[in-house]
Length: 180
Image 1 (spheres, helix red, strand yellow):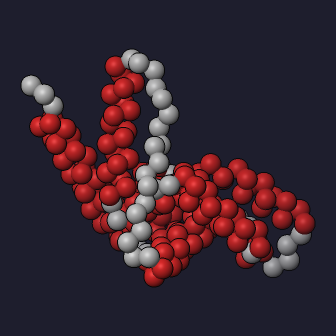
Image 2 (spheres, rainbow, N blue to C red; image 1 turned 135 degrees about the vertical axis):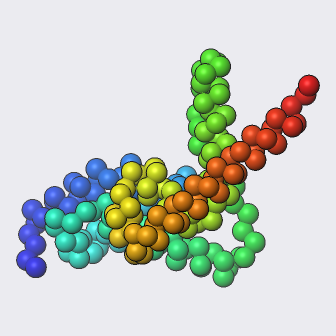
């Protein structure tokens, strides 16, 4: 395939437009903003070095999500080999909200879901991030994850059930700990 400098500029523009989605996806995998930013940077560097491998007309987001996924898996394996007992600090994902009860309740619910998401396995966070957060179709998520569509559907169903149980168990635990 003969790609021109115009193709490279178009690729760069599309990549820049994807950055917010890439950061959000990486954060759902890493649990830490700094690690997610590093992951996105590494993925962008790899994509820019290999931009000619991308097929114009195909979905750049799928290609980038696949790169991020592969880098995350590689980094996770490396970290396990270096230090199998790494303690990850969770960074607060929410900013201070106004003092209205509705906003406070929404924040508490979001914190419960975010906390429960962090307790999911990496594969479960991955499928939820692609389909539920990024809005990918099952077909596109399957292409990104390099698995059959049915596998995405079953993994997503299991991950959603587990996430629901985790959120519900946190809610029940909080209710039991409230003063009467």
